[in-house]
Image (cartoon, rainbow, N blue to C red; front, side):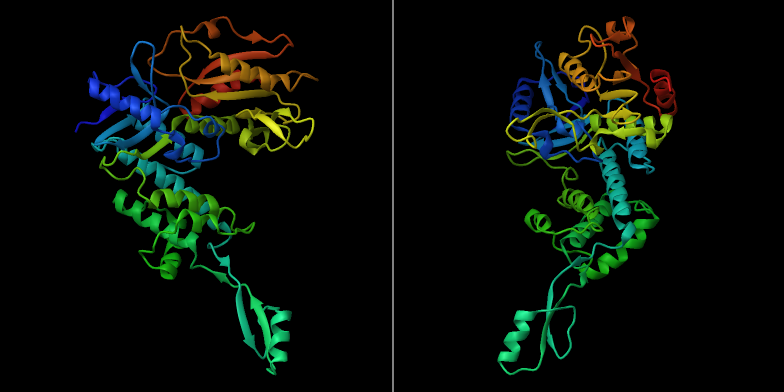
Length: 424
């Protein structure tokens, strides 16, 4: 059956039948996008998921901010990147600090792009995690011998002596590579290698790491369950492997890499383009002002709450972490929130986005007031200037300057636009 094809944030590329309208309604009602979304990096956008598809007041179905494929009841919905494969690959490459070369000439829909993005995110996670060595997990091992191996087990030794045995009970904690992390990573590597069908996709560092892992657990290990993976106790050195293992588990379960639509439950995989846009803007801001002068909101842990309980100040309600802070966190020069949505009339600026930005700025009323800005995408098909742009810049009642800007989608132009937006 022909898939339903949408560009992200846009209607379908053909007229829909009544059955397709009903199928989309069931998909929108029953589907939680967070269950199918792979996060390519830490982002604030992941905390505020939008719908996969939504129907407007005129009865027109539009895709949300995701790209990918979902399968259900013998039907497939494919959401393709509105800005093109090359642009999305460039954003992901900049955010993950890797090179992604999409094969746009192949008639494979979004599946090949998804596979390339997954491979890039997986490669980046493995490289970051393996900086301090392989994913060895310390496992307790008991010994009974004439000499101690590790920590002496006092209770066990007393039992041996009471039984007339002149031996020592001890417990060692050697690193063991045969663990759920290793098995999950090797299983994901096999899925990606079978899907990509090209040499060199792993990169040099991953090519060095994988032979040792395969030698430990075999080329086709049994995939651990979610419970097994969640039970792993990470040390500060092995903690980076948590993200690598979670991403590997999603890949190893073939999420988004199959091509059939069976069953009455949705299956598939989605990439959040709003997340990629946020990560791309963070990358461009750091290029414009230096990494030390730019803080990503996901790095903030203290003071970012809208409300605190009077009974227990540690209890908070509401999140107050903007996407990008330029300058010192306590006294920022600019606070910028990324918005992967069109800035066009008659829609203009969404009311909730105005409230959100005003809440960020209200936390900084002492001293020089920071600039507040919403950074939208500069879509090529929307050349008309919006009211929020023509009448700007704006000013809050307290005195903060506020701008609504459409940022370019290429790296060099986006860096220049940041310089123009924030006069440093």
